[in-house]
Length: 462
RNA sequence: GUGGGUAUAGCUCAGUUGGUUAGAGCACUAGAUUGUGGUUCUAGGGGUCGUCGGUUCGAGCCCGAUUAUCCACCCCA
Image 1: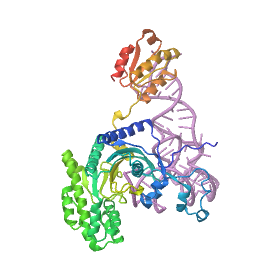
Image 2: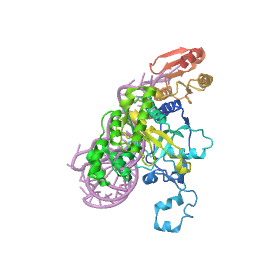
Image 3: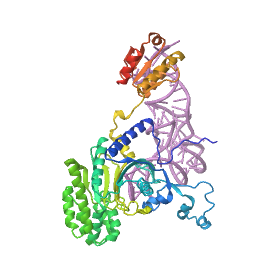
Image 4: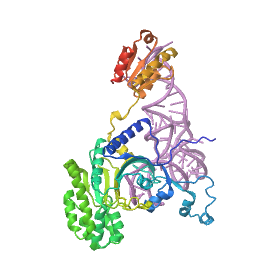
């Protein structure tokens, strides 16, 4: 067999021990917060039926789903005309009936529908698993990445939305981030704005354009709106709305005036006010309410399915796409035949958070753990002497290893150093005879002799 | 899907107007030190200069194609 140059599939990464320790630090931190708010973990398969996923993410999204080629003679049953026409898209359902999951929300909706009879509502779940997208990789964008989703189904209460704000704030603060923005919007406000312009059918065009405000500027947005069918008169009404300034309360007051004639718009405003009210009652934290939370009516993510509040989190400390997002969808499970079940949830982008923490140097020293003590290996005799000690150390919950061969001591010390093992026990002829073992502290270089009992005591307290 | 950059040792990169046998730092191996790492000194291994073709007496360098990769747009975590 020919030797292949080793390489990774595009947009995927290996994780070294050090990287895994840092990743687990992120997962553990987020997980602790989820659990504290009453959410319980589930997992779903990496592979879903393609049918489950298609049509849920829009045309663009469908293209980004990784399809899995059927096994066996997958061309045998394909209609001949599709092959002759080389029609790729219609061919897909004939040659691929499975796909890798694209997000965690749709599999969760499927899970809820399949288990509707055993779930007690409201059902609060979190899920931390990889998802796959056939996107073109770039900074902060991978083809395989982890999402940390937390959702509740079967509860209309806006307390849930308020708690997601707290979850974001608490988890990100625990990770050491201190300058980030939790952007909030409500789909109903966007509906209201389109209504007062008299162009409710253009809501998607409107939001896609104004969403780009901070990227292409006001002039760019105006050009795009004109291209998408808005008139100069519409723009005069829109401009003050999209450039809304002031505190969150001021923005909402202003919107109330503008959207006075739209019941949907007013309801959206009311919902945001309720969420802010809950956050205030829960925390009384003025900084959270005025600095971290920003009402931003240009926020328009995932418009296809969100129906109420919309969330997005960005860090202001490094240049990076959003590190989290989410929202409410009134008919989460409708696509699988279970009507009238509302859901709301948010997601943390673990890989982007990793990149941010790395860039800011925010990983704590203790995120890296390794062996506590290495027993050196001089010769067969010393090895035999060391074996019972090795197990005693482990029984005392001390991470210990014996160097597996009688290599040169220099090599064994270098191994301990490379692995950042803080202690090395040296057992030679002299130590065996006296029963006093040499313990070397690799940080200070200090070396002392002591018996097993003293050794165990010292190591278990370190 | 659209646009731009890059490709030289395991890694990060130098390499002069095209001219002898392609270099450095880090990493690795060995020795200085037969029971001691992280510092120091010495020596050593390691290259199809991404690939294919063209120009030239001569190509790492110039030209074309191709592949890989990075960045940006669209969209997203």
